[in-house]
Length: 77
Image (cartoon, rainbow, N blue to C red; front, top):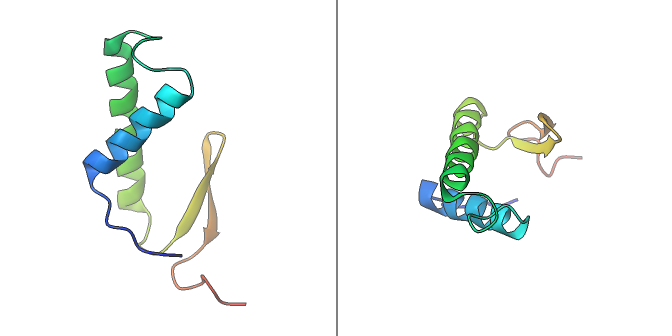
């Protein structure tokens, strides 16, 4: 585990790159749809990040978030 200093622009660029690599870039769907999809995804991620305690480890499984550990549990056996 490590803490990362990630800006909102970093997240947006990562989301854009993910969608482009998944074949859903602005050259495949319209530029407007691409912009809306990225905005919706980053907005969802921001809302989730505000609700999750610092240090919690979560992952996405389909359309659900799964808690892997609570803050402070990482590294404990």
